[in-house]
Length: 464
Image (tube, rainbow, N blue to C red; front, side):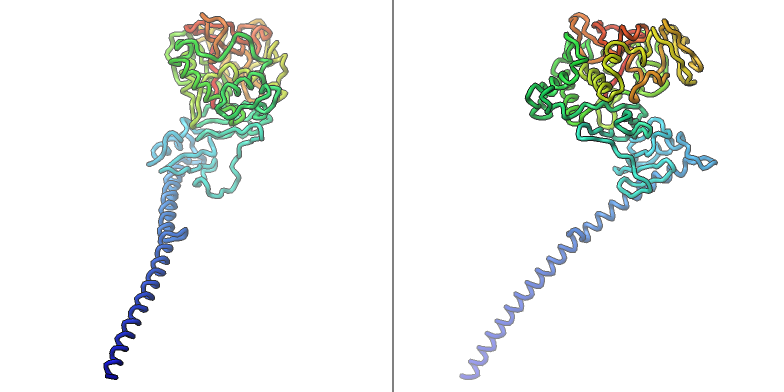
């Protein structure tokens, strides 16, 4: 009897020990599993480290591809050959060719290209780094204030000689076109002198934003001229809705950023134009180009759109934008209201002024409708009482805050509608065939037919 009891107790004890051991084993396994999962998936886990290693390998591969292209672009003197660099970069496997400039030059650097999805920076001395790596010198930063925050379109670089807001902030986009920042202070929207007592409720309160801008630039507004749709022939917009959506995108951008860019030069082209029927060619905002004239207002907007770059929209200026440019020049102390509204002779290319043209690359013509009439401008003095059309940026005298020929030389088409319904297209800024007191920088042409395409009307684009 006693033996049976002992046997029964031993059996129970054995069962109890087995259950405890099982529970302990499960707990240990759970702990091990948790540790294993953390080791695999944690912030410093194996999978995370493996992914990081993969990214770093890809970055190194992208960097190496660009390094090889750069190393193969040095000439016999050890100098970087920009033309060869362009050729070699275009051949790089996995490169986004939209990030490679049409032409590489000194001002292209620091040059950022995208390879296999990673931004790779090429320094002027040939050094190559992945964006985010530390470099020997600080990369230029965008100037900004509480009132204005310029943006840098993808692939664009900052002009090192005009990198402050005080002197005119200039950038060069990936296609080598140049743009100047126009400040429109954010504080105007909360200023009762301009907002009528009520600030815009948001960046999409378009009516209030526009009316505030108009009040701010009221000195340059003119009754009977308004940014509104007339017909598709006016600027190519299909209907009023499309036109208004375009304008609203501009208003929102200017409101949020405290400004917008305009072309540093009048739009030019590599081939001189002599008649309205000339084929449309590639528009350029670069120095020493033939002025892009003989275009209708609708053609001008089509060409301005082609200047879109780096995620930003190219367009003709709306009338309010031209007025804001005038206000900007006044507020910066660069020009007085008199010089902008009454007489721009002292700083524009007009019929009634004389000035020297000493730049060897610049050209001039007294007969823009005659083939072969363009002449070199080396040591040429433009006489007073003469109509002389210039290539883009030909004379530094005719510039202000980095902007060339905003007064005189050629009118610039806008997206504004004139008071004369049958003549809806508006151009602004004066022309070489008029005196500066007749068509100053703020001048609005009195309405033009949609078919007008003349030698003295061109393109001054905006970018937002």
